[in-house]
Length: 59
Image 1 (cartoon, rainbow, N blue to C red):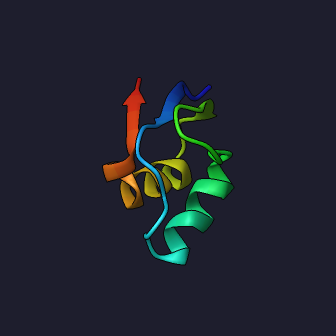
Image 2: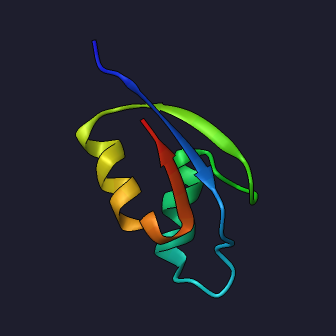
């Protein structure tokens, strides 16, 4: 069973590439300071890595 990762959007996506916004929407992060808990899978890790400059990640 995989662990969970808590991800919080701490910076806005305004002015960023549309692909960045698409990744955030795919993760369920639509507004600043919103947190979601996701399964720790390679796919989710790749999404986190792409937008890591906008997120706070808690294991």
